[in-house]
Image 1 (cartoon, rainbow, N blue to C red):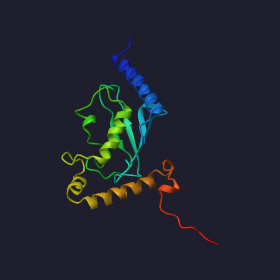
Image 2: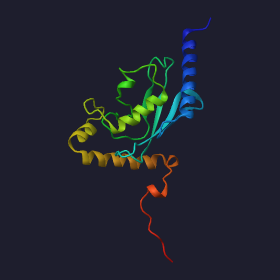
Image 3: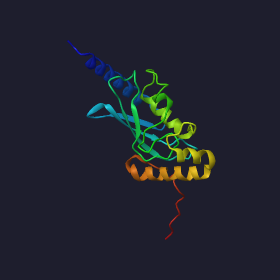
Image 4: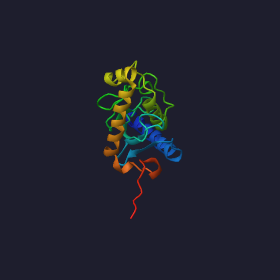
Length: 178
């Protein structure tokens, strides 16, 4: 007889394959993700900072860890990249309602990553995971943005292979004359 644990694992695996196909065929702007080649229950993802935000030009790596209960239970989502944000704990885990009390099995990986990307620009300082970031966000926006820019610059060092900056978006280049 087949165990209920095995049936749940197969169902979760099928759903993750479907999520991957959807993400690969219609990826949201600034988001990429794929399962670990050795374990479909662990995904690696990259979120680019949204345009016109302090996180712009950042490249932030995450891991998503799924249980056999997916999609009935949310994955654990954690930033691997160092982050400075009111709703991101020091260990990279997020305080995001759709990953907790507002989870729905209708959410797929693309929806999760899109929500995480949206959170970067729209933090909830009333429910802080990082009290210092929340306080700066509310009381000193210039210092908050300076700290976020440091995070963005660190992401370039942490993820050099994932950055492809066009000359038109980088700093001006002085012409060299002979």
